[in-house]
Image 1 (cartoon, rainbow, N blue to C red):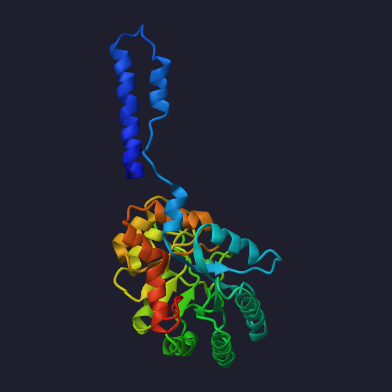
Image 2 (image 1 turned 180 degrees about the vertical axis):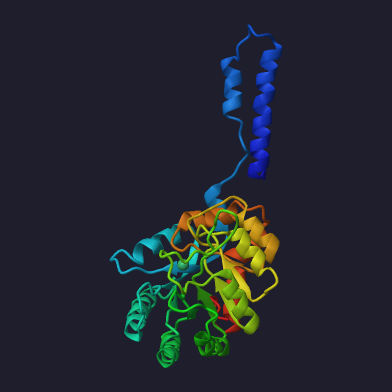
Amino acid sequence: MNIDRRKFVARSAAGAAGILMGSRLKGMSAPVRPEEQEDVLYTKPGKYDLMKEVMKYRKIDTHAHIYWTEDSPGTQLDYGRRLGIEKQVISRYLDVMPGTPDQFRKFNDLTIKAIKHYPDHLLGGFVLNPAYKQESLDEIKRCADAGMIGTGELYYQVKINDPRYYPIIEKLIDLKMIIHSHAECQLGVGGYRMKYNGYKQPNTSIPEDFVDIARRYPEGIFQYAHIGMGGDWEYECKMFRDYPNIYVDTSGSNNAENMIDFAVEHLGEDRLFFASDNSYYQSVGKILAANLNERQKQKIFFDNYNNLLKKGGRGVDGQ
Ligand SMILES: [Zn+2]
């Protein structure tokens, strides 16, 4: 029997209240009998085999990272295998300033080494810094030749809608590659307001920057990183509603209830990409817990992203 969690809680609570009420009606002198207490405590939700549900869906983790540590990517591949994640799109985000060509080449080398080592499980995303135009364009070519599929999580050196990004984005459009960038959208008292207050790099992209660049390049495919990062995901989803070339990835270690449902309601079921940002079990759980049907979950876990990969001849089944 399939029963969603909200109904289960409601029914269990109703059942418990009924039993307690029944006891009271019998008179204050009649305490709840042990077998009645057991009914209260062990009302069963029906059969739900969690791991069967987890393994039912093909999955591409569209936002994961590789680290400099020795256990990476081995440990994360182990997590992935146990959760039925076929592929992880990894990158090493450029969390250094100023982010010189030497630095981004070194970061991409780490990713290239990993995808060559685990070609069946890893897909590579490259990073760059548009402040170095020619070196970034050269790096796109080098990384594409090495088999990488698009950008990894681009970082905070330059805002995504800065004119220095234009030649980079035009090149990525030519190559039919997905443009994936970090972004933030802070929660604040009295409503959303990004606060570049010393803790944030001043060029960190925000939802408005994505809207700006998506309008300028309607043929670009933009992946807005981690709606589960802890920011104002309601604002993000509302902001992107009318821009069909902005996709959101569901990663992040924050798992507010209703986040996925809200995103589907505002963006439609074709514009979400499953992703972990290395929070693996949470990332799968939040999709399974959403009030979506099997087909919708399969789209988010796998099809939406793979269909875009196919446009560039990079589909995971060889199309
Ligand atoms: Zn990020």
